[in-house]
Image 1 (cartoon, rainbow, N blue to C red):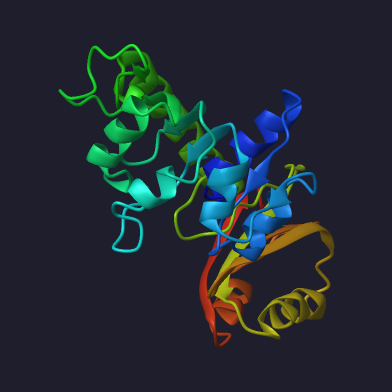
Image 2 (cartoon, helix red, strand yellow; image 1 turned 45 degrees about the vertical axis):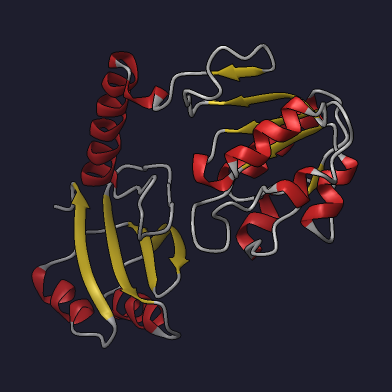
Length: 249
């Protein structure tokens, strides 16, 4: 339930294990749909998914529409002996309804990382530590990853794991590289390339990606550029930033 960044990965892993996977996500984005395997079958309703699956994994945010979503009515639709996994948010599940489903045998097991006094000690509940990403090892790895990705951006212009920019990585070649950030509207990139052409500067390689209203470009060129050329690019309507990277002498 929920086929975003995490849910789609879980679906892929389940397929690899030989499981038959059924998914439900009424808010599925086009980008998430492209990531999803064609082998994942779609359930038309949440109750239909609960009625057909032996293992149900939740991957939802907490909002008004999802708070207490898994209630007595929905749990009443499951097959006897179903296992419910919740590593999303505790508030998605109505706990009295959950305990009732466990006591009545509708659920064989509940697996989560949200320990509560009512669930601790039950043989049919598996509880794990929450916020596993906050272990010393995980925090060290996160710091290393952040430093490596920041260095890659500063030295090569590559972007990974940004919250508001597209992911973009272009293999580096020797020479000069331009990074251009602009509004995601037509003709801007063409105007940038026209300025380079007017100066007899050849484009060796380039990559363009966009995310919502922002576009980002990496352009490898054969010769150097001076401040006059850069100022011409920055003066183009819709250009947000132009940065020179590498040895451009």
